[in-house]
Every structure is written in C-alpha cells, then in structure tokens.
Image 1: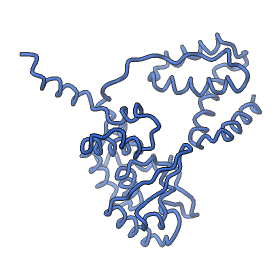
Image 2: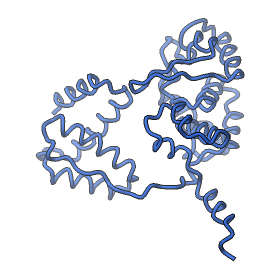
Image 3: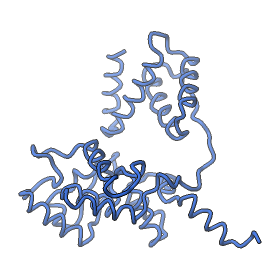
Image 4: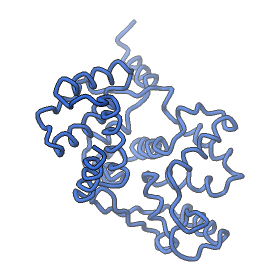
Length: 273
C-alpha cells in the first residue's frame, strides 16, 4: 500500500497538480487507509467511511473535498467501482460571523505585528493583493520594482499589479534586510517561508490584537481583499480573474456577507410591520 501511495503521488505530479494539492490528496487518502486498517477496500467500507466523516462533525464542504481526493485515488488504484457520491447541500448565502475577519480586526492585527517587521509586511502583501499565501514566493525584488508580479499557480499564470504604497514599503523592507535580488520573504538560507510558520506567527498576534483566533489565518486575508474589492467594483468576473479562480462560483463564496449583514438587508425591505 505504501508503494501504491508513492505511485499515486508520482501520478499527481505527472498530472501537474500543485504541491499543496498533492499534500492534501495524500493526507486525505492516508486518513481513509487508517480507517480501513487491514480490511479490504470495498464499496461498503468507503460508504462506512463517508458515514464516519459525517458523524465526526466535519462540514459538508470538507467532507466533499476529502471524498474527491479519495475518489481520485480509488480510480487510480483500480477501485473505480468503490467511488462514492459527494454530499448535496443548498448553497450557503451567508458566512458565519465567528469566522469572518473584519477590516477593523485586520487593522488591529497590523498594529500588533508592528514589532515583527517581516510579518507586518506579509499581512499587508496578502491582504493588499489577494494572493494565496503560497504565492508569496513570487514576490521578488525585481518584480516589486517593476510593480508587477507574475504568479503561476494551478497551471495558470496571472499578473498581480502592486499598489504604489506596497511597492515602496516592500522595496524599503528588502533593503533593510539586505536582500538585493530574488525572493523578498525568505528564510536565513534564502528559501521561501513555510506557510505553516506564517500561520503560527499570525495566531500569536490574536491575544495582543484582541481578535478571535478562529478568524486569523492567511486565507481570511485573501477573503477580506475580495470583499473589499467587490464592495467598490461590483465586478465578480474581474475579481475572479484577480484571485485566479477558474469558476465564479468559487468567487461567490469569498464575497458572502455575514448573517448579521444579511439580516440587516432583510429588515431594510420593510415587509414586517
């Protein structure tokens, strides 16, 4: 089975999946194999695993994501007949308030990060451009000076235009760090920063900033950019291009309002007297 997983990993690389996607697929498959143990892989065991995920309290979106990884593995391994259907759910029209990072909370995080210069600029870079945390490695001294960053992700290339203020601050930061070329946000060895380290550093700001830890992770900065941009532009197609989404349906998830905002809009209808 270990060899099969290694072969599956190589297959995913041949399919030009990103490192992050491959890591997720392998993690999801390993979780399933631990559940199965020494038993044979059958349609019944896969259905039981699906029930296990539901009973474990995972969100429907998370379950479907794990099943998608598993179905891909089953098809590759010759168990296509064991694949299971994803769960159906009504499209959510608003997001949970306890997981929504507001602009005011973001500003408090920035204030708390001022003593950690690198993290301070990482937060602004992600939130000011809407990039994925994995795309920080494309921010080089040369690209920042040019004002344009070419990002290649998921077999797509897009251009990130940098705001003037961000260009100046990142150029200044690079000089202070003695970085004259190449990646700006790097380790002492010149390698790109590990995303888990960035996540961990952000979590440490929560208490000082007075922000719930459940709201503080890199992807929420990307969502805050999306919502702020959409409130101004109201152009979801353009926003999808900026974020690098292949489907506008994905972009819709990013710009969902909170339940509180949704209730306010309903109350403004004036239909209850």
